[in-house]
Length: 255
Image (tube, rainbow, N blue to C red; front, side):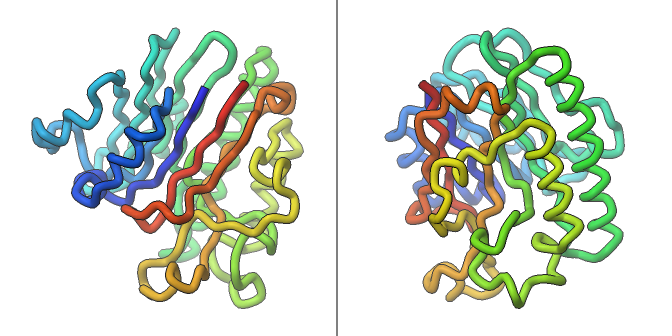
């Protein structure tokens, strides 16, 4: 089973850049998109044809041109759920849950804290509330695949310039500590578990065009899996040469 996660940084713009040819060539079973910045009714008929062969679940933000996630699935699923039951987060269109026979998939666009400490606080509250929800799923016996843009690099190996970014949101100690709690709560960072010493990035700032050219990036897009699901992980691949967004796609293959 192939699952692709990609922060598209504006779905309509992304569709104009030829990236969907790459997606189609991979023939993924599941595609998780984040940061849509659009509602489905804003897409043209031609753009909607990109979803042919998939059932699409949408969770756009209430605020126009902001946030939003969508999950595309090629097979029938047992249940789809929008959000996770916390209104102040759910209005921002950040979570879709998809229940399969063997696991629950959560496609998540975690908040960014780059606009100031108010949003850092909001981000940490989101992390906390989602972890509480995930703990309930684990206690109920569910196995979980948690994917998306986490907006946090966990360790120094996960960004090109760790020393310069100690006080930058995305690598602040309190953000990294919150992500650590996910690992303590029964999740495995599948890419890092399979590639303990590999430095590879999934996002490069668009504020400095040379950042991607010079590979000055961050790894902030993850596939976390429950510990008891990890033996089913065949591979995790970061396609850092694939363009179309300031993020690149990441693929998880399950046996």
